[in-house]
Length: 188
Image (cartoon, rainbow, N blue to C red; front, side, top):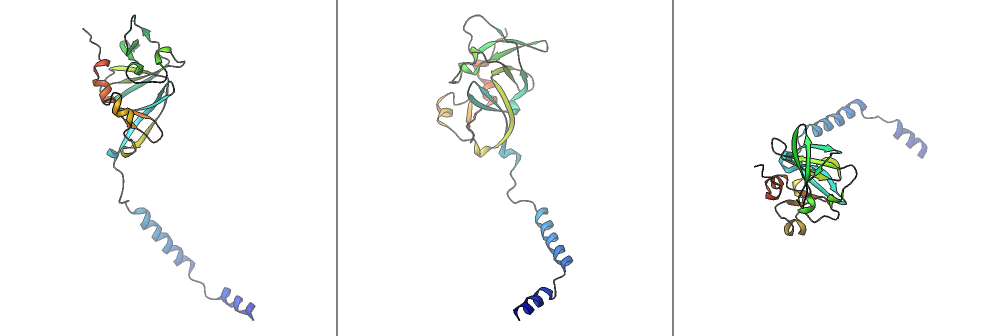
């Protein structure tokens, strides 16, 4: 007898599959068409270029970067000119190339040289100077609230460092680098 009940329950009236599917699809369409209430604003993110100097990992806002150069020949200048490493030719213009080693406590001095040297060219509207780095990784966006202050940012050149990301990159303030007197070359 239980087999007869099971057969009756399986062969009983089924709901209209098309109507049920239509309701599910309409509900999904309504849910997907709604604007999320917590949409992050573009101003709540910072786009950065990530790079390394020796083993130290950094990031700098892309709005301060005019271009990135690879395998650059830098002509050194005589004497101790830190942080100025030397000069390079950038499409017929002379570009000063700086080292962060004279300004930040780095584990490896970039003056010792790295194979495959890169130069990140900084400037507002035009190239102002370049900084020599070991490697350029990628451009990423970080939520502003994920860049946390650190002990290093408050004790070592506090104006140059914005903080540290969750993946342990030190975020440099590109505008502060451009304004720092140590990176200004008197052209007179």
